[in-house]
Length: 549
Image 1 (cartoon, rainbow, N blue to C red):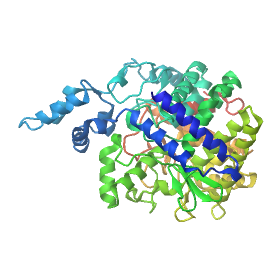
Image 2: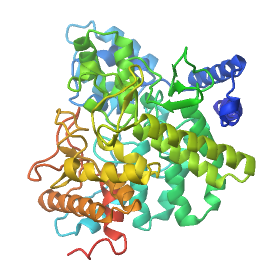
Image 3: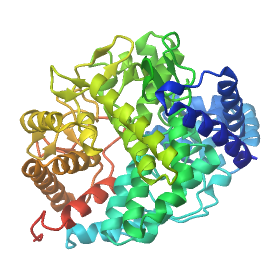
């Protein structure tokens, strides 16, 4: 049933998208928008419920009383009985004088699945050997039956998880993991991962944040096109034709609402109207309740804010969709998460990725009229990125608050995305390179922002995906010396930490390389998929690094 509904949604959305590619022919037919809404509402009705919906009062009590230190633990646990049976037992037992909440949870839920790999760290391995030994440890097998009772969404092919508390596959993480798998010669896993994401588009209409039911209200930065590009580099150009339906469906998901926006209705879901036929995109989670996996944190933030609870919840969830959960780039005051305004912001990273998706479709669509239409769409977005998201004052690609029409003034490495996808003119790429060298470059790599806020996506932390995109983007624009400096400092930082703790971790302190990274809603995680995935291609790119000791 879900696949049938999806097919209808795709048909309607593709019609709308095709008609809208030419600026002279934006559709205004309200019936089309209504049909899309009805179909997507039906899709929502078919989706499985998340743990906060299934377990209501029990869920809220477990999370608010911190039965588990990490709020993600409970939502990943596997119920031993149906939700109805567990809730009936809870209503009966909780009134007992001797009721113990933790004992009840342990009786009715199994711990989150943690496959025993038998893996132990070994300081005698080189960092490259460590990473290559770790791939099987981070790989989960297709067809697990955990999802039949728990929150996991079962996928048809094997996949690589990040590691630590992240027991499922994550959308944008996986692109960087694929880079490492390709560098390691694990072509079969690259195909399996891409196939899994295509499957989610087919079954769900989009790629969720991760394959958990509590992620079904949001996606993550749209790297699917870049994943297909990695696979095409291994298998050939036919890969684009194979996955073209999913590439177009991915685009349709992010552009849903485009036919409805106007000067009088400026934002619908991910789409924001700017002028005439010019639209750009924002992060937007369809949910308006606290995140299941961070319920207590969100409730406390909402209380502190004193603002409308549903509005703040949506801003928090939308910040999670960005992958930057959290950075002060989303905060109205640049300091306090209680002022979060994610959906008010048009970010350069998201729009650069959608430009890349549009160019990939344009380059590999076979019909000439379609190719020309997609090319016009991509060029329109490229022009809008450079018109609206580049600041002459700071010489940087900045977030734009569309409600005020002003740049936020908060500079982050999101500003390198236009270089990574080739959307920046040469002179602006040169200006970005100069600011990277003077402001962002630190002893251990690139700082994520220029302000230390205690949030994990700010200084002094450096994150693997941002190092890779800055390195690759600068290299592509001919700023090779700076690119190599970033690469060398980042890899040295990885190697120093590995020598000390025999681990690859999720993020690194780039300012004081004697310290660990910090901040965020959970401890620093080890594993780690995208750290491994960035290190290997940096280490193996011909002519870009001397042979490691």
